[in-house]
Length: 152
Image 1 (tube, rainbow, N blue to C red):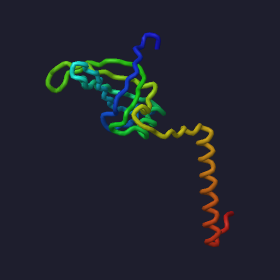
Image 2 (cartoon, rainbow, N blue to C red; image 1 turned 90 degrees about the vertical axis):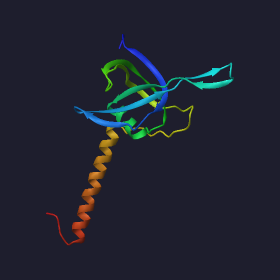
Image 3 (cartoon, one colour; image 1 turned 90 degrees about the horizontal axis):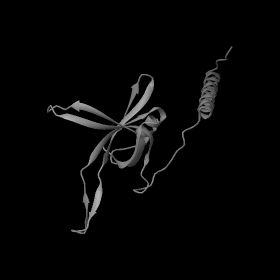
Image 4 (tube, one colour; image 1 turned 30 degrees about the vertical axis):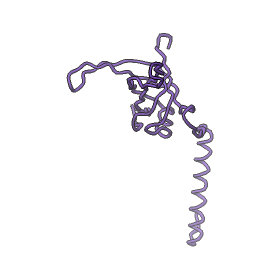
């Protein structure tokens, strides 16, 4: 991490977030569009610059949360490691892609409001599962009793 290039960008989700398995780990992939705006004094108006596109990967719980929370067009802030990849597109032109391995992703609250739900801890998830299993067992006993069947 010492020599990694860290970036923070502000932009909009450019399409649906896809969640997939990479081995046994979840990863969400999304595209973020960043369009700089500058005030042009000569015309006394704001002018949009050229949109820059970034591919973002969010791993594990962050990826799951991105897939459940983000929609196309949402304003976001992404912080993570920047890397580049070079490939040849369908027209035979060599292209450099900008990729971010996200460490933090959130809605840009300067653009609107959001609601936050804390992810339950592992202990809370186990307790919910145990309560659900106990309720299911109780329900089976009630059904058996209503049918006149006694458990041995």
